[in-house]
Image (tube, rainbow, N blue to C red; front, side, top):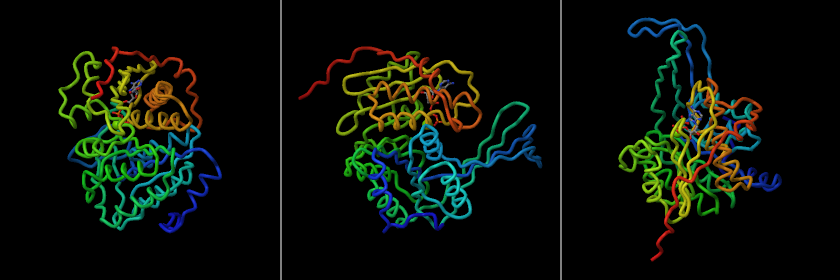
Length: 342
Ligand SMILES: Nc1ncnc2c1ncn2[C@@H]1O[C@H](COP(=O)(O)OP(=O)(O)OP(=O)(O)O)[C@@H](O)[C@H]1O
Ligand SMILES: [Mg+2]
């Protein structure tokens, strides 16, 4: 894959300085090609005939990077790519205005088949595990990210970890990002999420199921604001903000001295898959452009609603979020007692 920059090439950092401004870097260790087969009806245990096939670059990092690009940012994408599918994703990066800093691996990047029934709208997804990453490949990505990162950058770490990487891999990346004076924003689940939190990222974002499962918190009651103390328990060290998304109910965001509930604008929901990723893209971009927490949450929520209103996880080439932004509501669920400092 000759489009990939090699480890000894330092041009991107130089280029960043020429353009000024901070970069949004996105790490997705397990990218994919989504192969969507439209069927009239899925009949198991027999041969099915596809009516139409759509091929899209998939994986959470691609959704985040594409949304950053659609919103006028200049995303830089990291992850592991190999084989024919890897080349396809590199080509898509070029088309979508995404700087490609993937690490080339010996394994094959995965394909995720998505079977959509036209008659019911239901879909069946098969998520491949992904290639096994070798230790030297993991190390190359870490080094590339650490070399590129500069103070003020926002680095989104998103999605599951492929085989071969220990649960602490995001933690190692967070440490590298922090050492460069950049901000790490983590969106993952399970042991990878728990481990990443121990390394003090700047922000953690996950959905409510991921939050309650990873941290052993009882499932949300009728009032999601009851989760605020559990979110707050995670704060400390470098971790400044925890965001837990609640699907169509919006999100909770907690900092040391504030708890906010953000309610999305009403949209006709078509497919909310990727709304969390789109939220994070717009949120990180707003932060990089100097927005405060509340404004960044608003921007993220408007973009997430736009994503929920369309079939594929994408904002389209030139999204107009003005009307959606006007419909976002921010509430303070309850005043927080000031932090007790020993
Ligand atoms: N039906 C909807 N209408 C409007 N906004 C929505 C809807 N569903 C989700 N959102 C917005 O998207 C945000 C993220 O949604 P959700 O909690 O589903 O994230 P997620 O599970 O991480 O999604 P994914 O991982 O597929 O990107 C919510 O906080 C909300 O603002
Ligand atoms: Mg998510």
